[in-house]
Amino acid sequence: MKKIMTNIKTLAALLMVGAALTACSSEDNFMNDQPANPTEPQVYTMTIEATKGDAAATRGLSLDETKHKLTPTWNEGEEVVVVQTVGTTNTTLGTLKAKASTDGITTLTGELVGLQTDAQLKFYLHGSTYDYTGQTGVLLSDANSIEKKYDYAFAATYDYTIDGSNVTVPSGINLEAQQSIVKFTLVDDSDNPVNVTSLKIDTKNYIIEKIDNVDPTGNTQGSKSMTITPTSGTNVIYVAIRNTEPNKDKPNDYTLTATTADGIKYAYTKKDVTFVNGKYYEVKVKILSHPLSKAVVGEIVGTDGMAYPTDYKDRMPSGVSAVAVVAYKNGYSGLAIALEDVSDSKMTWCDRNSKEIARLSCEAWNESEKAVTGGRWLLPSNGDWENMFKATSGSTTNYTDLNAAITAAGGKALHDVDSDNMYWTSTEDDPGYGTAVYSVFLEVDGAKFGKVEPEYYSSYVRACLSF
Image (spheres, rainbow, N blue to C red):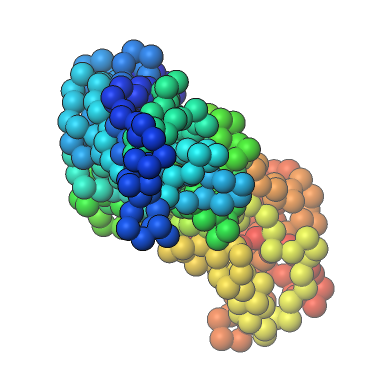
């Protein structure tokens, strides 16, 4: 992952006060300046020289693609909300607005109502409520872009003076970014663009969705996910991300689930990633998961109905479990074998009840936490077992390569190397009467099928996923 320090457009600025202020020379003049109704608060004018330069190297939001950075600018009318804090009470005083500037220097001007002399002043770029919901993945220009809506920054000071109706901040104020900005470029394993209409980001630790800094009573700890919805398909998505306290600059796990216009989902997981507030990152994401219709033998199957590379067994997307491994493909359809037996113990069947037992032991998974989107669990037939053996080893009697695929995917190996270790199949000797049910015998010299009389034999059950 490439971390890039940048000058981000509005995220930080050195605010220098340069207004000439006038004072009242006597108590009488001061009283004459008061409103006619003495209960109305005094209106103050604040004018601040705001500077963005090299000192704010990670802030600003004008993208220079040739240098992979964001350069400092100010947009006309860009707003900074001023809040005062006295004790535990926060009060919004007014809004300062910027003059357009491309050299990083501007003037913020506005009126404040209700200012007290013993308050802490807080400055919030783009509003005191940080709301990261509704992002469309756009960095610049668009009304819903990060530049216009999600570029929050903050500063606070006690160092200000009131002279008549004018306010100065002698020491200046440095606005600090409240989020990182990440550019995700989505490609497949061959570096081809993967255009998506939705990007869901799931995290291990909490991230901020929305937080009200003036009235925090209704704020929650945060969320573990957010969804970015571009207005049209794209493989380049910009996201403003802020981790919650106390983890704002600590590593987090991120799982990206991207959805294309035709509903195909792709996923990517990266652990222990640190996005620091105020910094800009460019991340090229290789989306390696794909629908089962595009799966190949040996890939892991998740409960989301997606196929994943084998090395994803320990980093599946949030809420997704690995339950099977692809063992046979025929065009867009195929079979996957479960990573574990239906039951840890052998199961004895009544011969005339075999189909019902199959439904209870295997198909019950379709209604459980092992249910797979777009697939259906069943008891494999003799032919299903042979297809899976042959697809993994080239032989209808060699089961060891299928076993190797199961264990490579993190599953439990089939019970083997024992003439007493058998797995039930759904194949019947005399369909309609069920006089005998076949089992597959896994022995030292390979796999073979044979009839068993259920009242004398018991076998294991391993479900098979049809897709």
